[in-house]
Length: 84
Image 1 (cartoon, one colour):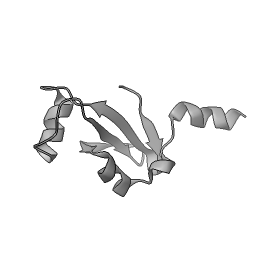
Image 2: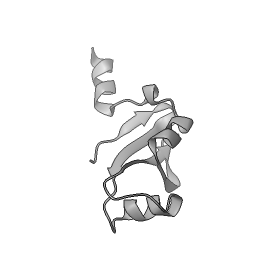
Image 3: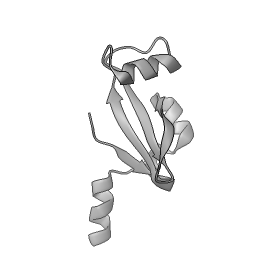
């Protein structure tokens, strides 16, 4: 997947597809033992522009509790908005 989204306060969210044995899969299963290969989870890596101590892995419904999904933006789109 690889792309990420930015939210208010420097929040950075990266969708990741779980692959058996990968670090993403291991972290997701630490939170939810029933996490399955092929699921898409969301990794939060920065807040207020600073790296978080431990990246958080969230399912979509949990991410919605952190940030309204409508406030997440593609960083490239934001740059384009500023030059228009």
